[in-house]
Image (tube, rainbow, N blue to C red; front, side, top):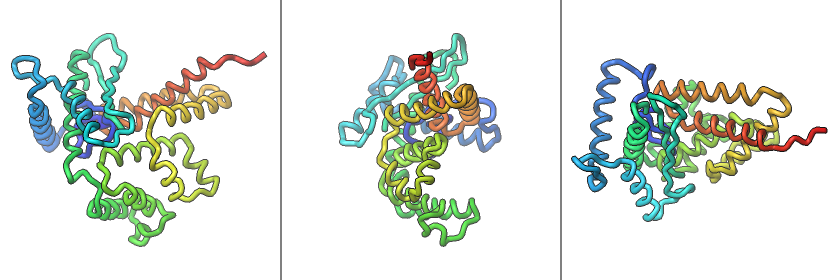
Length: 289
């Protein structure tokens, strides 16, 4: 869910082409945005049949057709060819629209929806390029960059129980998949770490490979969200006020990430899980005497 146009599209992007303050402001940033805008327009114009008069493209319909086309060609879409739009509640401009792909701040809600669809459409099309597939070259480069970032030793990449080794194992397990698919998996593990599930599995003496193997084929679906929400609802009953504080923090993180043009999927999922936990507490009958 990129908070702004990204050269590394991810599964379930929340698209916002206008990151606002904190999204970069130098000449290089301006040139990058200009090039990206041109690329977006080129992609949008390729869907010329979706016009609304005067040559304007209906990007909302074009985006939906793109994913339906992928599904008809046998693409493995865990949640079906569904594009979900969510407007952030607001009674006046600026409006913000999140769009989530399967398995911007603008003057009107309709424009926010079209703008989100435009960036998501570009991410979808760009993801089809062979360079966005995880192959041997990509794996070696990614592992080398990870080693450099953490000042690690090359041997660490070959040791399963190290962080770098687990990273390599995850990449190897997803060889041939697109960056969108891999990013969804990464979001799953981010949520599991935040939720405490990974820590619980480690305490049960599960190896990194066992954890990865267990969750690598799990979809980020309503069942997983509901289970995490139940965990948070239980913690709230043990520590009243915890859920409200966590939700407030998640909402701030989501807004800060959006304004900074960062990837949004993790922050958005976190917020949704906590809101679901709140609703579970409200709907749960009071059994006290």
